[in-house]
Image (cartoon, rainbow, N blue to C red; front, side):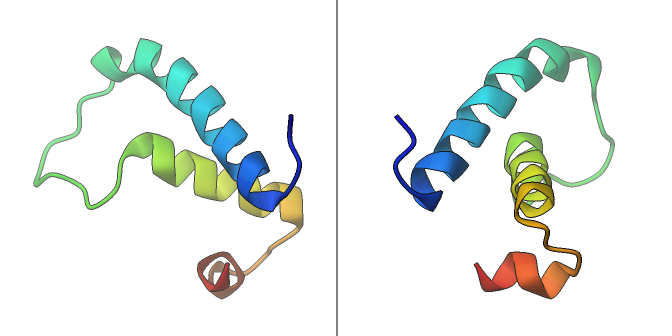
Length: 62
């Protein structure tokens, strides 16, 4: 059950990561290893959209 914002973020992450693991073998990026996973980045963007955050600083403040 989603009781608060933290639970919502965790639920979104689990859903994104579950779906992304099926696509990950198809997506290979050159260069150094990223600081965060693609699933974490996608989760941040989706949560920001759901909350109506339009500016990157709003995402980072939460």
